Structure formats: structure tokens, C-alpha cells
Length: 313
Image 1 (tube, rainbow, N blue to C red):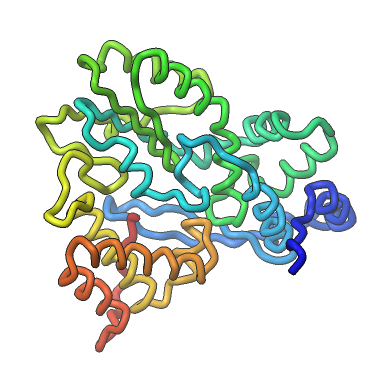
Image 2 (cartoon, helix red, strand yellow):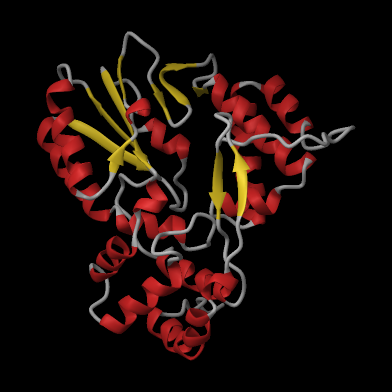
């Protein structure tokens, strides 16, 4: 069977030129908004796109999905996830986790254009792509392209972190806006400012409430997993919060029929979200079969809840 041909960005943009004028004139009509409540009482605003723009964004996303992302990037990359991200930091004396504040809104048109400039030389292509993936001059949360574009925006930051990590004996990974550093060296506080300076110099802010420096004498948590403690079967143990959030996600999807909203929030299609849920249940089953059965049964509730449940996973 001949290999399936993946269309190039030139073909996509040339076809889009014909519809770009109508999209730009009526761009606000091609997005809709909904809110997902968080445990804090606040809400996360999700702004998915609608056809024909959504169809174009799917094609753009498919093009960039071919790109080889650095080994440090674990979010929105095939065969990488929160677990592979956590596994990179097992058995370290120190683990540091950093969260970027207001990440998607911080990815503005300037940063996105600069990211495309690292890939393309044609100004028309850069400007057109920037228009097609942004809304209100920023990266909207909930479109097919936003997750992978965010990886492109953080390319320079990732490279600077990797260089500094190699110089001082750190391991660096990133899952979306969650940055993790680990080392077997001395107290890492002496190097922390150098890393945080890279973040600010790239135009991002740190969420101070989520900045954590964890020694091996305490629980070291990376993207929902305890990396300095295995369960009895040799698997990394998910935290109680990870399990709680996962249960909430399943209730929202299966009891409240919020598959479309949750998929948009995570930048996934509904089938991909379902596969992700199945994969997480399978991992938990290896570590704790009884817990996996309990979680799996939430997909088939006897009495669906009528109360909206918050999601934070």
C-alpha cells in the first residue's frame, strides 16, 4: 500500500487564501465560548473554533504533528504524556516544578509569528498562519492548533533550559505549561534564578503558588505522579489528587455528556480523549486493579448526576 501523503503547509495556505478574507471579516462568528468551573470557584474560559476555520486548523495541526519535537517536550507529542514526563525524574535528589502563569493568553500574535519565523521564510505564510490560529491577538484555548502551536512558541525557552541544564547537571522536561527540573547535585536553589530569568526573558510569568523545590526526603510529585516512590508492582504511584481529578473528568464526560467540552479544553478530538481515558485506566489497573474497576464503573452510572462537576485535569 502506498504511503499516505501528508499535505504541505504551502498547499494548505494557498487554499486558505481564497477563504481568508471572509474569515477575517467574520472571525468572531467562527468562535464560541463556554466556561469550565474550577475547584477554586473561578472558571476557565474555553474558545473553540467552528467550521470552516476549524477544518483548516485540523489540517494545520496535522502538518505540525509531523515535526520532531525535542526529547524534553512531553505534552501534545505522540507517545509522550504526563507519565513519560514524570519518569524522566525518577530517583533524583532534588525536583523542581514550575508553572507558567496564564500560559495561553501569554502566547500572543508576536510570539506566535516569531515561532513561525523559526520554520518559514515567507512573510505571507507566517502572517496567514498567525491569523488562522489566533483569536483576539492570542492563542485561544480549545482549538485544534493551540496545543501544538504552544510547543512551537516555547521552542527557544526549551533550548535555553536544555543548555543550562546540561551545564549544571539538571534534567529538564516540559508538559504543556508545567516545567520540571531535577538533579542529583547539591541544593539547586543557587541555580533557580538563572532558570526563572529565562522564563521572564521569553515574555512569560511564573505562578508563584505552584513553584516547588522538593528534596528526596519529601514526596516528589511530577505531573500527578510520585517519582521517588513505586507501588508494590513497580509502577509510579499517581497522587490522590490525580485520581480525584480523573474521576471528576470521567463523571463529566460520561454522566454529564461533556465529551465535546472536555475534548476542546484539552485540544483533542472526542475519540482521542476516549483513548486517553482508556490508557489511564489501563495504567491504574496494572498498579491497583480494584481502583481501576471503581474508576471504570463510573463510565456506566446507574443514576447520572444532574449537578455540574468541576474539572481540573
